[in-house]
Image (cartoon, rainbow, N blue to C red; front, side, top):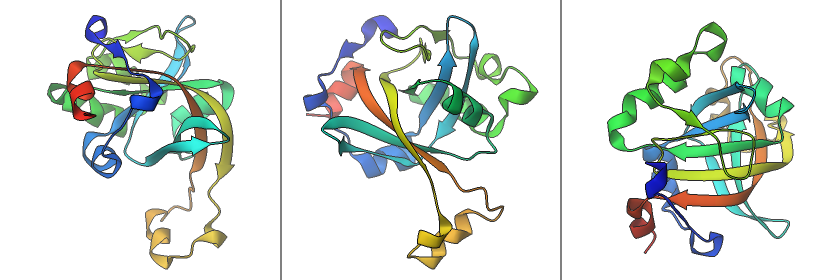
Length: 180
């Protein structure tokens, strides 16, 4: 599908973000495609915006996740969405650990090189964001103003938030039309 993607200028990139994060999900991948050292996971929490005059996406990763090691080691990541027929891939990437086997091969999707970062994207993607890490911060439970937030952390494995400058956005006609 990559050959059907077209560049979406960042000032034209727009989503229904609440619906997007809750219903679409994304595949977060960090590492280096050329060396074969990378891992992916399904994510459903995050944000988009402008920070320090840069377009950014903010993602969160628990330190217990294998992908955390790659986010710490490498300076870039990608976010990809897949067409609905790949819903099983999201389930596998969100529930299996890359420590225990090749969950990417099991998911049936095909890693490929990105255009601007070392982290791979996927041939089946219908939306790709290539990002360079620019900031991180650990979630501090002492700052929770809503006591209900703690219920998301029964194991006290608080996320690390990563801000990634969006360097490139490519999408299918479907995503391009969603933005109009």
